[in-house]
Length: 110
Length: 112
Image (tube, rainbow over all chains, first blue to last red; front, side):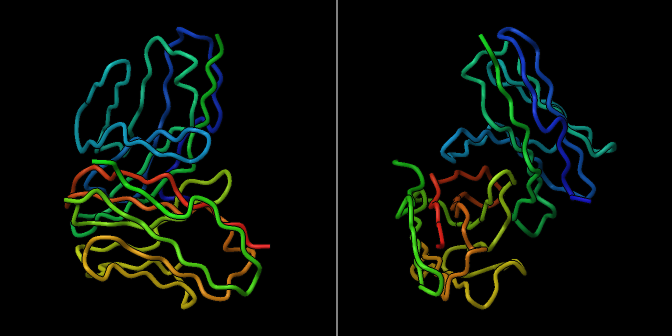
């Protein structure tokens, strides 16, 4: 079993829909990252959080440390949101190394 | 600031050849990371540096792999005697300690 699990693996939506991507982890963490990867490989960091909730534009990330679970929400989805969304955790306080989930492929259709 | 850059972007080599990749981090970042990503998978950690010191290495990093960051700025990742299983995207990232990691565009390696 992977230390970081994401669901769903694939997601399709119509433009304007509310999107939720889930991430569960089995290790103790000091921080959790949500990343976006477009075709061709470029990875962009969306959020780094260790508690609570963060919002940036139409993106919202939440984390529940007790339940070892995080969600990434996209409101009013748009075709340009189509990408792979990856959850990654920093597994301790003495390391910056990240453990990644396998990603959720999102396609938003007009 | 031009972000993290990697060179080359693509490399095709024959099995058994040696290859070297370069990563130039964001200039003020003291941490530099190497990851490997195969098709359809999330990235896997290989190694990371704080300044010129290599702080941690994955067990994935066999003795054919070596990474250096000689002056605490750019880093190189060398793979000796490449194998077909080494075909992957090699990603570099940099950060300040404990902060967000910024990723480069990656080097795609194909071993024939």
